[in-house]
Image (cartoon, rainbow, N blue to C red):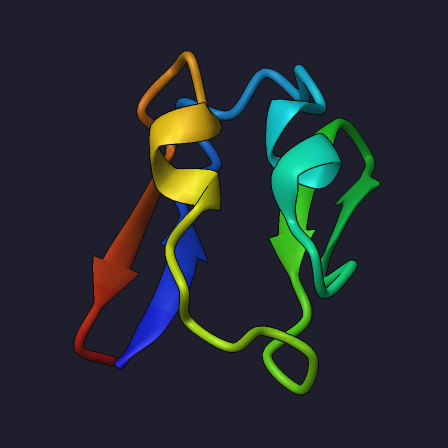
Length: 59
């Protein structure tokens, strides 16, 4: 299980960055990127995204 970003929906609002206590999210080239090493899969970033671009994934 991991958290992924749908690049077609992401608008780099930065809301996910602000709520991630692990600092596992950064913006690169206008898209949120999840650092899997830092991410603890708490999912707090998912409801923070106003564009529904972040979700849990089985991959």
